[in-house]
Image: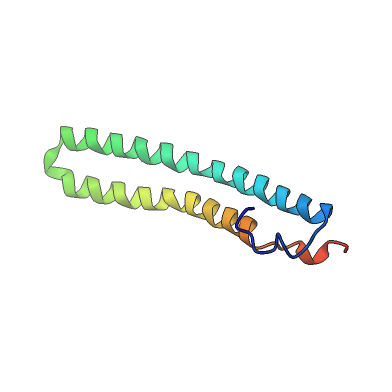
Amino acid sequence: MFANPLVDKVNGSAFDLVLVGAAIGAGLSMIAGIGPGIGQGYAAGKATEAVGKRPKFQALIMRTMFLGQAVAQTTGIYALIISMVLMYTNLFANFIPQ
């Protein structure tokens, strides 16, 4: 909201409401980063346990863990992209009555 280049171009309460809605939506979309963080921590812990039990399978366990964490991280990346789009591109700016 503070670095948005469209803030100074339009003065009006409707546009301010769009900016507030975009900021709230971006914050809510970043809640999606909690799930991948918890899941990746759990996967790393279980991989550490598995390597401790069977050290000779370390390469296979680590490879599988990294693949699973990369897949789990995509949810967080999508949430980050959505929040950036909401904050820095105002899709509804053209629909606001002047």
